[in-house]
Length: 346
Image 1: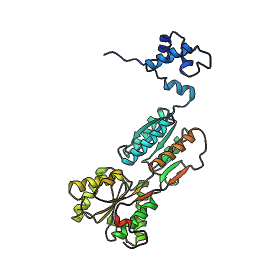
Image 2 (image 1 turned 120 degrees about the vertical axis):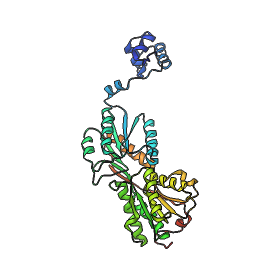
Image 3 (image 1 turned 90 degrees about the vertical axis):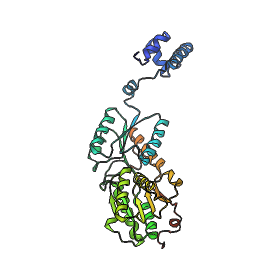
Image 4 (image 1 turned 45 degrees about the horizontal axis):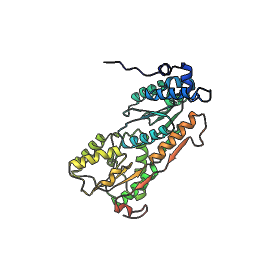
């Protein structure tokens, strides 16, 4: 098999019959400024295009002391929310001439340390992280070397730059409506209890019940992890325990609801009277016969604020707001909930 060879600036210079220095001037856009003949400039550029020449990013890094690369660390790229966020962030990076490198941790703190070290070794200019760690010690130390922005998850009282969605307020609003319509049975399916998204969404769930005058029962709270398989297993166990689907259910994330819906589809429960609400929205919910009410995050705004923070920090600027908490909105599909405003009886 013929071994491939990357075309270098030396190759282009030889093909054009000019020195490497002349080829470099032309390819760096300084040929006209330094009076390289137009015919020579055209010949060099034409050969570069013909042979698909690309300048070395390593040489550029040495010249500029920048890699023009950002690192993104997420727990699970197949999660709808993280996938949508990654897509939005990648678009912003591309428009700015930056490369985005994405790594997944599978909610494993040890693996997170490995992927972060790998990104740092690749000379990324900054990191955006949805961390599975319980404290910010490692990232505080790392922030002395390069900018770090946390998103989606927060660690108590961290001084690090941060962009999250307010989960407590909209969850309380949605659950209050849900509780007024279904006051005698509402279950909460959450991820790992140690993670801030779970804590915040459970806090909103509890507040919503209190505002509706519904007493929380301990057995209503069920924890697993944020993989769809966990949602499936928790819901299956709950249905087996009750001998029927629950009357009302709140899932703390889109992935958990995915598992619930898979179980319901397999067991022909999509036409049942269960009332489902969830944190995170998905466009496919509009296509279901089952009405699902959700808390919808503003993913484009979440990605933009992370990008704005990290690029300002890379440039050495001091952003006006280092920690940003974004609002969310309710997507009400169930007519009964639309007509049940907070503070009103169902």
